Amino acid sequence: MQEKIIGFLKQSKGYVSGEDMSGELKISRAAVWKYIDQLRHEGYDIAAVPHLGYKLEDCPDKLLPHEITFGLKTKRLGQNAMFLDTVGSSMDEAFRLGMEGAPEGTIVCAETQTKGRGRLGRRWASPKGKGIYASLILRPHFAPAQTAQLTLMTAVAIAQALTKISGIKIEIKWPNDLLVGGRKLAGILTELRAEMDQVEFVVIGFGINVNSTAQNLVEGSTSLKMETGNSFSRVLVLQELLVSLEFWYDGLKKQGFQPVLKAWKSNSATLKTRVRVTDADGVAEGVAFDLDDDGGLLIRQDSGVVIKKMAGDITQIK
Image (cartoon, rainbow, N blue to C red; front, top):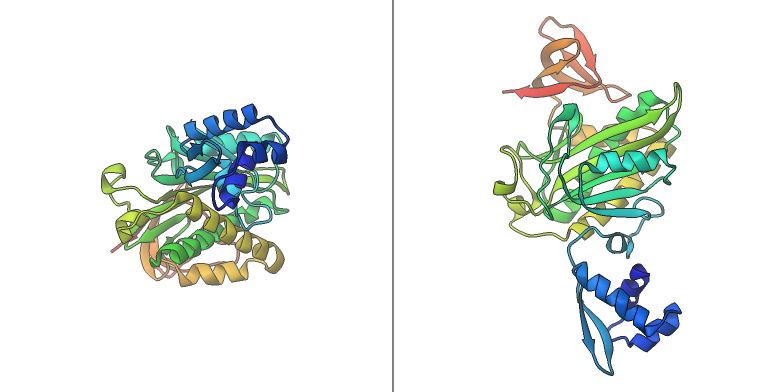
């Protein structure tokens, strides 16, 4: 009901009477007032004038479900949204929902995370109200080996959306980081539940530094605000991300991985650089020269031997 009232107020150019809202929504005027009061506690600035009614003056910059879905130009992604003020990890909550059968496109957003994580168990700084900390449930008809493609697709989609919003040149560091001038702007984490030959669901988590300052972030990170000097509506940023993600996700399912691979390579910060990759097999070093057709990083060692890495901790060597 809150979503309907906010939609009513947003579509109005002036004041809306409580009587009009109660009639349209088929609830009492007392119920309208109760929902208005709840919305004010969520941060909405709603004016109330006798004989005129209610007018929406301002909306909070929070990733509330009715903010995300209002005007969202997607068919599936983000249309079912959940908001948590504080959570250990949005990934864990989304994974739980996935196990319970939540539909594809469900997104879990948090104002802050107490145990936000990146790849290899690293902590992801989640200053409250400054970034986008979200996890998205997808249910592709993929084999488990294809999930690496989803990580690279997500990087391409988010990079394009953030460039469109900010005008910043964004590069992709294999396999899951978005960089500006070598500083981390965003990270991606992919986890899945699968049978032997079929994915049941995938949770794609992303953390994006939007309005953070240097004091909020770990060394070597940056934000849209730090790069441009401007603050951004996190709701509008997330909506743009979801539109871009749906475009690339649908394209991946219909056209295959090649368009994603081409776009990823054109924005790569990793290819044609010397890298050191650490994984369960040890440490490998050489020049990263290409990605193969399933998203693996191809590295030419000094001996001339070419090795392939699907995951690992990567360091670029200057």
